[in-house]
Length: 132
Image 1 (cartoon, rainbow, N blue to C red):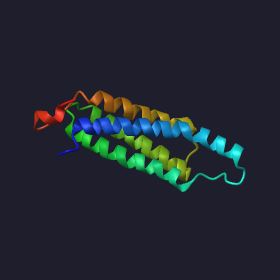
Image 2 (cartoon, one colour):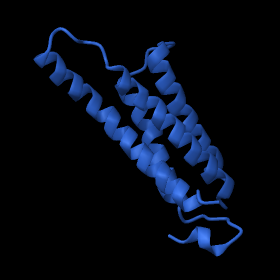
Image 3 (cartoon, rainbow, N blue to C red):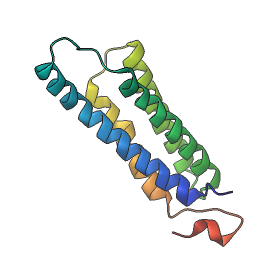
């Protein structure tokens, strides 16, 4: 399979880093927008869609990483982190409970660190998929 554990962990780490940048940049972009334009205070639809794209990519990366890792504790850790990220993003849209905006950094940073850590644990049928 082309989507090896190394690629899954690299993709997961990069996706989580981009998600983190997206989360950090959002308040600054909209502060700048509101100071320039007073007519349009709502978030553009394409910007909101990025959250779901990151969720889908990170789901695929976590799914593949957990199926090819030799480390047993990393599997639940990746799924817990992804589940927390999913909950925070969906909660932000549905506002079930009031959470601080910075809460999203916890699962995002944990996914980055777990994917980077998991890169050294490869369990594959061939040696080729474990090449760094």
